Image (tube, rainbow, N blue to C red; front, side):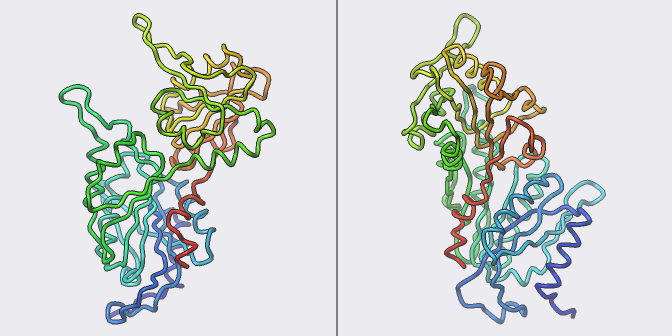
Length: 367
């Protein structure tokens, strides 16, 4: 029987695999403080956090994983062999599976495209069965969050469907899977998850607050919420800023955005929401703020989805005309396909979730 490959040779193989652009997905495997069971594996105890390399369909998730790895010298990048059969179905392989035994494992997933969800779920369901000590799924963007309720008989709440799928991930030796996700669309969605998963709901708003403090006009910032839902989600985290609340009202057959509360006159107004798709609501909110005297307008969303390149509708304003564009449009790297498209394009600026993910995993305490 062939000897189990060493960690060093496996890491070298992973680097070579990445250079050949073989499909893969990042996962995080971090140090196990519990005693190693020598009878279960012939490999030496692993005192490094292993990040298994992700898919060509989501290349920028690799950048996020590298940033997480940079948070600790104990993190090492690894790859999963991510190929397809002739019929298009995934052909997956986890290298050195015996070396994973007894470790704490986390998987950094990206569900930004429906076509890659099934293949990632296959890995997510397989990892806990490798006799690991615990399993954490890091899913920065919960993609079906906007489909969270039924308005007519026959509507399907796909947010509930995905939550139930994740709730049935097999338990590891340490118990239920932990889930780390950011700024889920509706607060009630936390109750969609079953008892076999432990959701941890994080937010990208601290990244925004840190960035706002760096601006030269930080003392003139006001926060605008495009609707009551955004206000409910974020107002407690941003309560020390002057607040403007917008609302959609119906006039005849049209829905018009109006200012419900607050005064943007002379302010650098930052529109804050959890996600953006077509951007129509943000554009309408921008117009009404300009009409009420805003000096500058920027925007922040945790999840920049932008289907069909809808990000192109947002122009850059260098300070002269807030009606023509945005001074900044901040997004996080939760949606890697968008990051690839808008990188180094004004007004967009990417705020990385790497530090927040590292903190959520408590990497500093585990090593």
